[in-house]
Length: 144
Ligand SMILES: [Cu+2]
Image (cartoon, rainbow, N blue to C red; front, top):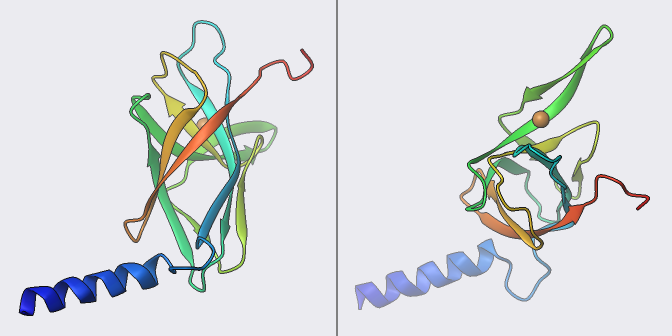
C-alpha cells in the first residue's frame, strides 16, 4: 500500500515536471552542427533554446556518444583579439530564449570522427533534465 502511494506520488511529480497535456517547457530550434574542416575533428554546434516554463532554466552542458567531449563556449573580444572562453552554465529566464549562434555562444564539439545527420546531442540541465536533440549539418560553404 505504502509502495503504491509512493508510485502515485512519483507519477504526479513527473506529470507536473513535464506539464502533462501542455506544451513542452523547453523547445529547441535551428539545431545545426558545422561541417568538419578536412583533417579536423573539432567543430561547433548552434541552436536556439526557449524556456516556456515559469522558472529559470539552467543549461549546464551537453554530451553525445559520437564525440569525445562537448563544452559550452562564448566568444570574447579583448582589444583586437577575439577568443573563446568556456561557460559553465547558461540561464534562460521564463519566457526568454538563448541563441547559440556563430560569433557568440556555441557548443564546442571535440573528437568527431564521423559527422552525419541527424547528429544526436543531448542537452543537460541543472535540474537533471536531459533533452536529446537531432542536429542537422551546417555546410562550410553555404553558397554551394
Ligand atoms: Cu569554442
